[in-house]
Length: 355
Image (cartoon, rainbow, N blue to C red; front, top):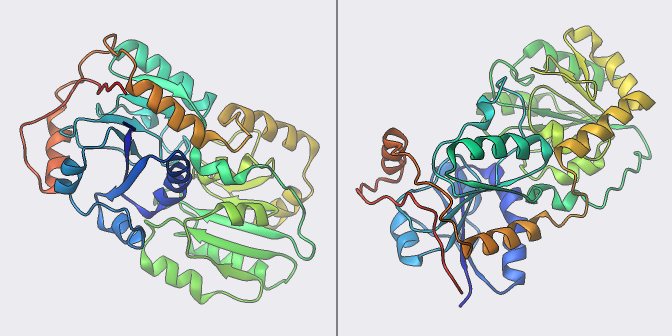
């Protein structure tokens, strides 16, 4: 017998994370299905032929391993529950709040040192899950790196978060300045927006498009990362993904700026800061290289393979050293309400299966 996998998502941005995992699973001849617990994610996977439509189909499918690309997963499904993350730690919340443990997962497949150490420390304290550093499947297509400068005008990728207090896309003055600079015709602007941003914001960006400013309605950012010379952004995990290429990023009022960023707080500094980034100052690049190593040391494009290897090995491992998960009643009620499936059944011990 071989393990059966389920990729569990909520939003469309999970696709570029799940797709490389699916490729690796199918390559091994294992069974794989997808499920989304929200409509936005369901629309994104509608063209796939291996989608489960509701919780009843999941129960009948009986997955062995659930690869979760969202914050919660049904506790009443008896399977190994694995968190593979929907983004890098983006410092939207200071301290360790961004590493919140919700009490659903048996295994965390971490991206790199920036996340592994924190989760390992938490694991030592509560002893309800284990941690394996595998790298992140989403960035597999990023490697090998091909940092070839644009032949004509440099490409500036603009990526914006949906979080209101940080989002540059929701700042009319910033967007107006980007539109002004684009009309100077010295750089090409490529704009992508977080799927959770309002439709009105997306329409506003569409309305200012010109020969030097293009809006892309996509969650597949890797091709745009490769195309861009530098990024202009705010506070989003996409910044970390982009920095893995060792390319500069200019940020506007980043929540926790480091020496690996060119961070500004004045709109009038946007143009000059982009100019500075395009020059790729030696000290800045050195800081970016250190940060990239800290965030995601794997540069072989094989993180999906490591995730699948790790989860299969952990599935059959003796996990008696792990404690039962907490009752977590409120979160369990919320997921039952979301799925419209109410049951008293709950599996709070990590699932083990021998093949």
